[in-house]
Image (cartoon, rainbow over all chains, first blue to last red; front, side, top):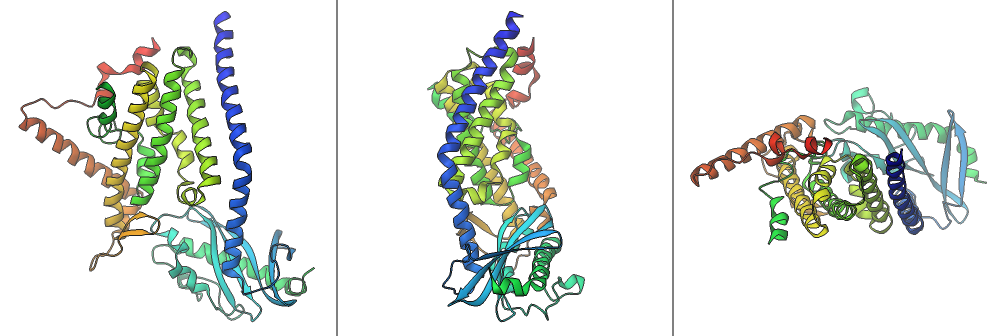
Length: 191
Length: 227
């Protein structure tokens, strides 16, 4: 009985110290981590939005489509709709989710993509996050393009030996496009 | 002198990968490229040195019956600490390493060194052991990573934007080598090569080949501690 108490006591003390230490680190790092996340978000927005003079983060529109919530970040030039960016995700990557930012121009063409998070195989699927692949999504006509990989009869050239990863990217885009097409008026008018 | 000995033993004589054959899971998982291997190695070295020192410092307070939970708490604390600090203050490094950091908790080299060394030695020697083992781990991962990246992707990248070899002319990469089977093939071949080399060297010097200490049942500390 006495031994049990002693063991419990020591383990509790060690856990308390560890807990206190982690709480301290959390307080110290919470602020910088939030800033880093915002910076990354901002960077990917800059990559896929056309030149604008407003603040897309505060000028955003929330719509619901297909049981999902979508946030469109709107770019404007002197109040005129210039384009929109949307964060979209496909759960069907080779190993987990593929999360990306997709940019749509006012001229009905795609501006580009920026990969936010992916866990694909390094050297194969992870090549979706290389300029060579991302550039395939620049300047495509939103309506005329068949948003499928070539293997599935579409227009998008997939990466050799990484069809699943490429398909996940294209799926994420085509979902986002559906939401955009369904709510186009709301998005262009803004708030 | 003893300090120096503990420091260098991890590099070759008791290399955690090639001689102790510990930590196979991260070894196979992250060695798809040289940059990954180095990053994982550095993170492990830091956690290993810190946890070794703390565990050595508390070795006389912790009762043997609850030592494993205590070690796990110490190790998990350091891993979380590294993860948070890196995320906040070195976001670029975290972006490429973030995936592997949680893997360190289950890396058995860390618990193995805590149990096998830090729990019975002074803080200074434990630090030397931790750093040495960590560097040995980094070296071994780099060797495997170099082979796999060269053969599997045809490139060699030291760090994100520092390519050593960008493209080998006339060479078609063997994609198998960066997939899971390639990990086993590379590790097995290098292990065999290392053993052969060590045996040849020992023979030439007229010595018997030493078995890896921790694979030898007579020296196994874990059984003895349980009694």
